[in-house]
Image (cartoon, rainbow, N blue to C red; front, side, top):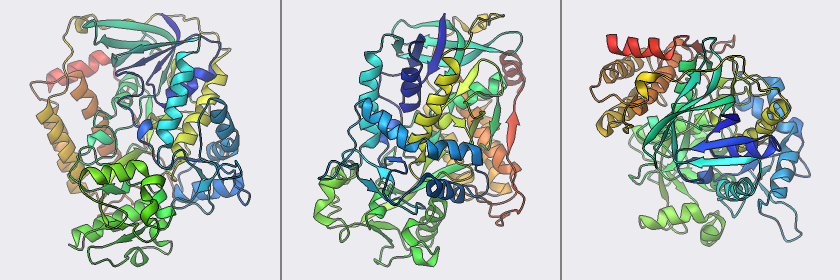
Length: 515
């Protein structure tokens, strides 16, 4: 039993745990700390209005504009107002952000920002730098217990629907156990691994989203998946990311003939919102003209120093971005939807909170503004901590673990089944969608739900994939990261998609057996 359980150990989970001091908190993570999550791969940095010619109001305007009508104004205000303090707090934890010769933090530009406001660390290694500092701080914090190699398989709920911990599998011991907690915080990350081409770790398959949905939490806007326009097209899984900061520094999107094409699609050219750039890149590839990122003139010889991560990825496959164009393609990158929370991170069901990519706080709307994700994790992680630090966590009811699952062996999802799911999601539920393509995707999901080698990992992936596809089917318009070829216009009236599966785990199992 623990007071507070945090599932996930990326920036969102670690920062929230640190801010909960002195409240005892336990973090569980499926892999060794710092491995398997998306945070260390974050290249762009963190957005914050700290520049001399910048203000939170300008950052707010850019966030709302990018979100295509679905950003919660109050949530966005909280986000941008907290930016400068969030940067200062991370510096206190030891994050070494890049500075100029005068010792001031340097800021860069990314798409859809009207000012230079992205703080970086060692060029394109912001995520790794933040993680390193937070891991060190968490390991030395007396109030934090870190349990590694514990795979969460589901949430535990009591007879009143209150979440009271998680069902976990201890990989080292080979045993399953019910991990009771008074309050549970989901910090499980995203779901890019549901797609055949992604910049996320392949194991990021939306399991946390599925856990929350099965427990009865409201899932908001699951159809909004952001595709990064410039993943390196080098037949790698996952696809290495070519950070947006490259275009912020002047790199240009060109086709195979070297012609810059973004002027054909948007007035902001290479720095247009991500959804527009991604569809433009896809259109060029589909038309047979190809798509590349050309940094030879804008960055050239400075590439290895300014963008060491991207340079290393190129170098592995024999590309020299100092003198050669980089082949690119869109890839699943970030989930804007998620577990619906209030402004303090609480979900729609008691005992469950959500932070980071698994959450829908309202700040991203239909299209996340570049580099707002790390900021969201820090600002809203602190708000959850403020709510729970003094909260009475005595439980009136105790959850029960499903006895019929305690002795089952833990098995990974069948690789062939996962490959089929990822292909179906990329084919029918990616950048371009239609009623027909979504029906095809849902048909594959239905077939896989009857797969003879069904495991908890595959089940959870299928739940999250179905949430995305059903949300996309329900939204008969095109908005932000969601584009319906059969409904290409954007409706004047805005609305959110909300899905709630109120069935208990036992009902879910029975439905699966009946299928």
